[in-house]
Length: 178
Image (cartoon, rainbow, N blue to C red; front, side, top):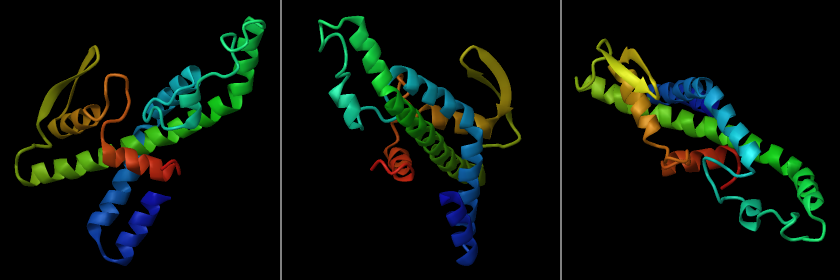
């Protein structure tokens, strides 16, 4: 809804930059859906947030229902704890999915805005193709796309938590977890 508000607000105020920003957010949301789903799956399995760890109360409390807290019950206490935490796991995975999508979309919007400025200053050439290595695969992409991917990649730590405070704040606002 936020990108729509930006597009409509930009149209009403005749602000083309706002309109571009809204459409860039839509583009980012659609491009990062699978990465976001992967991180949500990781969050569901680990019972911990990936992008913004330590933000929720249940992460600081830990696993209250476990064999460590109920030694006489053994593995049954662990099983019971897992069963009791399933609704929380789904909630955390859903929150992670939307936070990831909006964090990545905000990063892409900023990278696109910065790339547009560099193109205008003739520091980036959108027609120039470069080799880009992402993991083990090397592909040819435009210099602009490589710039944007590097900007997005640099906004994540080695454990995939977010480093860009503005984008983190945006994702918290969107998911109502300020």
